[in-house]
Image 1 (cartoon, one colour):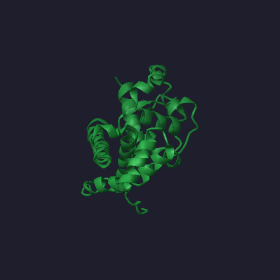
Image 2 (tube, one colour):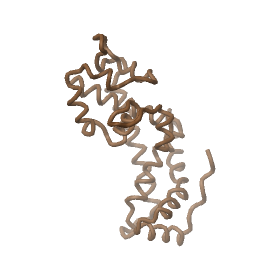
Image 3 (cartoon, one colour):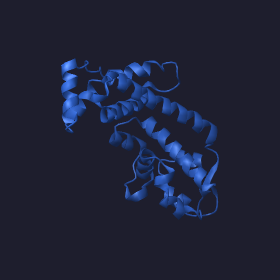
Image 4 (tube, one colour):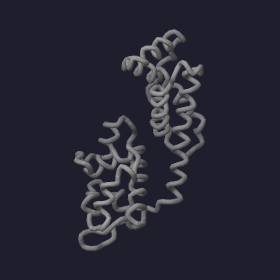
Amino acid sequence: MEPFLSPLSVEEERDCLERLQNSDETAREKLILHNMRLVAHVVKRYGSSAEDPEDLISIGTIGLLKAVNTFHPDKGSKFSTYAIRCIENEILMFFRSRKKMRSEVSIFEPIGTDKEGHAILLYDVLESENADFVLMTEQKSMMQKMMENLDRILTPRELEIIGYRYGVGGKKELTQREIATRMNISRSYVSRIEKRALGKIRKYLNE
């Protein structure tokens, strides 16, 4: 992991925040790059967890991006204080979703049938690099309804990853690694989001 850039001075941070109010992308990028140390600081608190630190850095970075996009200097709080709260919230939401996913989703439960009528397991989908999601589930009577409601079933990020993984919504089918590069997150984080999204779809199909 490359070393993080040094913190901005009070004057530099104030200048960036002022320019950010005018949608200055250079200021936005500078605030993010020079505050990545805050992400590392929060991630260290979870050093005893079983999660990959790089994955937590990726997740924490999402929180930092949210902080940069939503911070209002006129509210009186320091940017670093606000950013740390956003970063920690993002990581805690991830842990809560992981706990819920473990209790609700079994990778050995069926999510549909193939053209020959054989059950397709979530495990089969996750293990296959070339799985054609649409073809495998088109035999379900609710397939069309499910496709029309994907944006309600999944979060925007889950929808985007499922779209790229299985060529849904006119997107080109990509590998997890290609998606990770495109979205600037880790491959294992892509895998977890994919699994969570497929779990939601399985639950919808079996309701």
